[in-house]
Length: 181
Image (tube, one colour):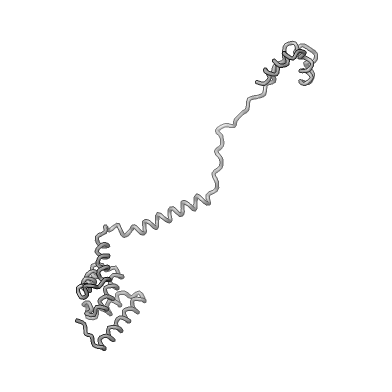
C-alpha cells in the first residue's frame, strides 16, 4: 500500500510533474525512468497509471499490458485499465500485416486523387479521324432525249432547252421523274 503522508503525496506530485515535462519534450524513456525509480513499477496507483500510459505510448505493448494488469489488480474498478488491456490484447491478436492498412489506404487515396486530377486537367481527346476521306459520287447530268440532242436548241442553256424541247406535259413530267433520281 502506498504511503499516504503529505510528504509522499508531494513527492509523487513532483515526480509526476517531472515525468510529464520529459514526456512533453519527447523523452519517453527518461519519463519512464523517473516514474520507475529503482527499476520496478511504482506503488502509487497514479504513478503506475502514468507509467503504463507512457509505456503504451512508446509502443512497448507486452510491458504496458503487464503494467495495466497490475493497476487493475490494485483497483479492480479502474475503467481505463480495463479499456487499455482490451485494446492492447486486440492489437496483439491482429496479424502482423494489419499495421500497414492505414498506409495502404493513404496510398490508395493518393492514387485515386492523382487519377482524378489527371482526368480533369488532361487535354480533351481529338475526334477520331476516318480511315479514308469520304468521296462523294460525281454528279452525272441526265441524258437528253434523242430528239433534243439533234436539235439546234441542244446547245442552249438547260432552262431554255427544257422549254423548247418538251412540247407536251406528259414528256416533261417523264423527264422530271427521271432526273429526280
